[in-house]
Amino acid sequence: MPASTALSVLPFDAWGLGLSRPLVVAGPCSAEDEQQVMDAALALKADGRTQVFRAGLWKPRTRPGSFEGAGDAGLAWLQRVKRETGLLTITEVATPQHVEACLAAGIDLLWIGARTTPNPFSVQAIADALNGVDIPVLVKNPINPDLHLWTGALERLHRAGLRRLAAVHRGFSWFERTPYRNSPMWEFPIRLKAAHPELELLCDPSHIAGSTERIASVAQQALDLGFSGLMMEVHPDPSLARSDADQQLTPAAFGEVLDGLIFRLAAPTAGMSDRLEELRDLIDQLDEEIAQKLGTRMDIAERIGDHKRTHNVAILQPERWERIMNRQLRLAAHLGLSEAFVREFMDAIHRESIQRQTGDSAEQVLVGSPSISSKNA
Image (tube, rainbow, N blue to C red; front, side, top):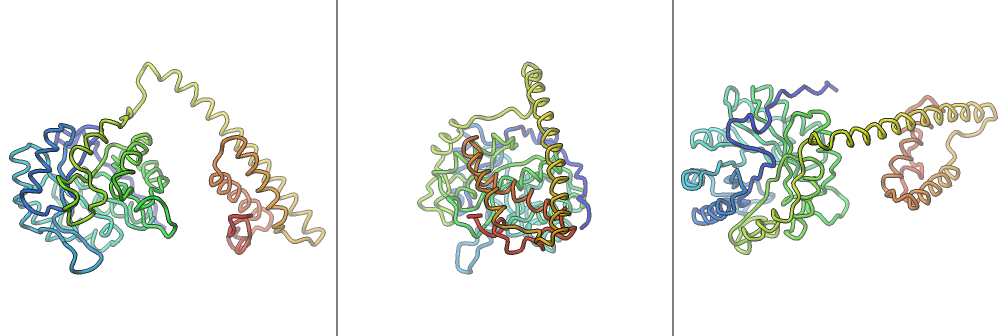
């Protein structure tokens, strides 16, 4: 697999649009008619905290017959929003024709949606249409949890010369039932940010939550994780919305959500740096101790493997591993550690131990092992 391309991208305050963290992008899921668009935009302008007005003009729907957006007609509505409110405008593009129409209409920013991101052909076509064009583009994660597709979409746009790029986390479709419309799977945006620290990262709590009741908690979690801002759906009357009615806030509810959020600093201030460094030093020391202990454990695992081979005993002993796991889960409960974390951590140790003892792929050895395939191991 090719190595990830370094992204030389700009922070919001270097985009030349007057943007700053935390960036708030808000507006209706779909631009339905001119009055609806203007009512939403005027309410958001009055609130004063939205910097970019969003509205979908072309809506990729699962089945034909659903409202698929106002299309090109809505471009004039977004132009009026900018003219009368001063808000910047953004809409979703999925084809080169969408791109060309938006550029001709003077739309300020574009976003690539979760249904387009996983299609390299579509992303490349958009990148080709934007080659040589200096416009900011936000890239939503693909519907399914695939970090390579998300990164690849950003890389294609970057290769087309775009430097004002940002990512939008809107959650993932997943086979397990969760309280969310789209599972947050926070580890994916965290890994993306770790690989590309300079990349601005927004959260779309509307699509993650799927209902207005959970939007505030999702938004706060994103801010606690250091996200650069929020992209939220706001409709003047969600009961009349032609798409995603359950997850769109009224302007009043939107204001209440923002009022209740705690916006974190992007970096520590000078006054807290000394104490923070002390705590980080402790973390570094503990990490070194953990690594040393893990190394010692693996050395012992190899010796156990040698002893088993000498006495013609099978490497994999499920009953023994079940006792270890149960003991660690009891200890985890006492220490306040989550069961899911301990299972994942101990399973990783188990895989490495088996690989050390056999020299084979741990995944091959552990197929069907209770420690991997059963939650009751």
